Every structure is written in C-alpha cells, then in structure tokens.
Image (cartoon, rainbow, N blue to C red; front, top):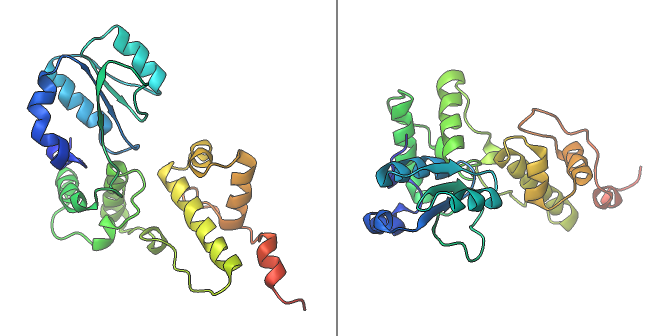
Length: 230
C-alpha cells in the first residue's frame, strides 16, 4: 500500500494530519479514480479506530455517515452541501506531477522491479493516476510494453487548417477519456459531455485504444469538404 506521504497533495494537508485525525467530525475523502482515495481512507480509519466505506456516490456516503459519526468515507464526489464532515480532496497527478517519480519508485518496489525506470512510464497524461502507474509498470515488467507515444502529451497541431486540427484534438480527448474510464464507455461519454450515440460516432472516427478497435476511416463533414474533388 502506498504510504500517505507519497499521495498527491500531501505537502498541503500532511502537516495537519494529526490535528485532522483528532477532530470529532467525519472525514470525507474524494478525488479522481485511482488517486489513492481508498488507500488513504483505510489508513486514516485505522488511525482513528473507526469504520470506513467506499461509496459509489455522494448520496450513499451521506446516508452511511448518518449511522457512523466520525467515520471515513472514500468517494469520487465532493460532499453534499451542509453535511457535517471534514472534506479532504486528493488532486490528480496532472495537478501534482512532481510526486510521480517517488510514486513510481514505491510502486516498483512493491512489484519487485529494480534498476532505473524508463522516463515514459511517468509521462502525462496518466489516466487513472496511481492505478495506471502500476498498470504501466506491470505492462513494462511482464510484456516489455511502454505507453503509446500519443498518450504522453497533448496533440501536436502541425496542420494550418482548423478542420484538421479540430480532428486531431477530438481524437486526443476521446482517447484520453476512454483510457481514464478504463474502457467504460458510459463513463467516457460523461467525461466528454456527449451522448452514447455521439461517443460511438467518435469511436468509429478515431478508434478505441483500450479495446484495440481501429478507426473505420469515417471522417466528419468538415474534413470531407476541404478535400479537393477528383
């Protein structure tokens, strides 16, 4: 288990950890998927000697706290307004990239990986945060695979026309959402703010890197219009 000192944002809240644990209020810990929310909840609940829950939604966490004063909730959502609890939000690795090297080293130690690690393993964006870092390590250890070059940074807009650049941006955002949702298309659609039919249209255009589906070659009208007719 990753120690709390290595979690994103510890430099801000770690100095007040003892004071936080001594408070009587319940603790509401939330953050992006895979950011260490559940691990931290287990650790803090053990230190407090109280129960904890990994809630699927904010309403479930709030209902559970009604019967567990002083308990610890791990959830992805911020607490409902007015709920009597102390809120601790864990940032994503996008927000705290400086912690990635130490996290990689700790995860490598847990997986028995020795020696220097390829820089590509710590590249951003890092979908899933801690979970994805571990998955990257295991893929490299077991399969010799490094993250795809396209997953390590923002798109490069080398074309001059707007249509081509918008197409490249659309591909980047789609693939990032699919990776961060671990292939869950309903979640990817929510992340992108599109409907399921719109998501499937985007997947036909750009493919799905998680499920290994190639693009069909279908292009948006804005690209077809700019191509010269034969």
